[in-house]
Image (tube, rainbow, N blue to C red; front, side, top):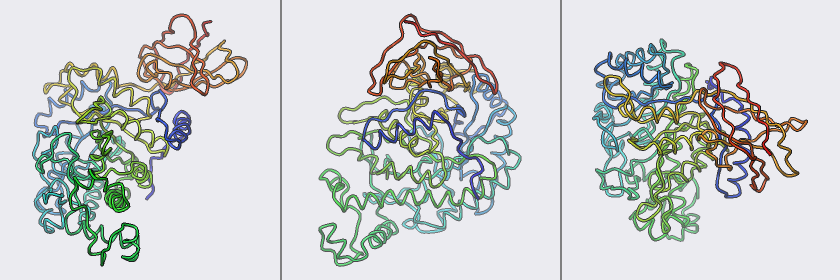
Length: 548
């Protein structure tokens, strides 16, 4: 069945895609363009523990709505909806949660959480994968095995293909039991790995990982090794061809093995030779094939709700610019080639949810952390390829409004369709009162998109110059002329820009003239000021007379 909700043409996004495609092809730094996406919505994720007081929950929802939040994201734990026996589903808890959210006038974003809750950063719950699931096969058949020999039980490994039938059964049961919420869903997210993310469980404290280490490769179970061997046989056909490419003298494909020592594989450059590239390409390919298989089950069952499907990819920002082994933490988690991974999102017709928009760079030893570069690169690829993408923060924010502004800058300048805050407990108290975090969060990010047209008179650009707008808030470029909003010459010395800002927000801004090389001429005089009126379904207008 084809996806019901189609991606609509958006002129600002189209222009950004053209510019970003050129930048990416040239290897340049990728930049987007300021403005609020026309369908932008801000979400808050529910807390991990179950709701026990629904009267208090109603008060919390009222507070969220009053502050401009539009969507509530809800983890639906496999441990809860199919707890004891295969095909014995119980959706009653989630039906109750959804009813309260719907009655509060908010949208719902269900998340199929087929993974364990507990053991990851920020987890304050213990919802393991149901024990009946693990009874369907052996540990080696069903779990990831790391380079240390550790078996991980956070999520069923993709090699155990019976799992796809289990997911299919869950999707169909959900669709059959949630018809009352037709029209109440915003998106439906599908968890594809540990912590619900499309990755391997490479950075797990139980397997000896500590931040900012690269983690552990997860390719050492019998099925994983067999998959690697099969992939190499399919690629090279003969062992002689493989030996020629790898510089080895193997006698058969049964001798093809994952790296015997992960540290040596990365530290001595093994990942850069043909063997290493083949291994990491296969390693990521297991994940993209997994996404393809899961989404092939999800779309027929869930597209009936008329909303898009989404899946999260983690923002693994540490070791990003390690001068000796760049990106080793990402590669160890299976994120080897973001371009081909995002191609799979496009092919599977899935929105990408990406994390870490708020985090600040810490590029020195031993962290080599560059979340800003990572977020902006991935978002740029999404814009280039036409993949809708949503934003999340990676860690709870407390007492640091600059992090909300950082998240807002990336959200509004790199084409994200929405932002989801981690989590409810950080912005609303158990009784429903606003915490000190709610106002700075919603002021920066909870915007109601309002279409605006700004008419610019008297700019009189010289040959080679075009006219742009730039303003103070993050969605107006934050005075960074690299993100200025382009205007169109409509003749008679008049330029116009039509885009989206936040309704009822006050802006200071100016017009500028800019050449293709980036040389900027600012208009003189003071800033223009405008509080954008909300006009439902209409366009707010402003006329700017260039100040000489």
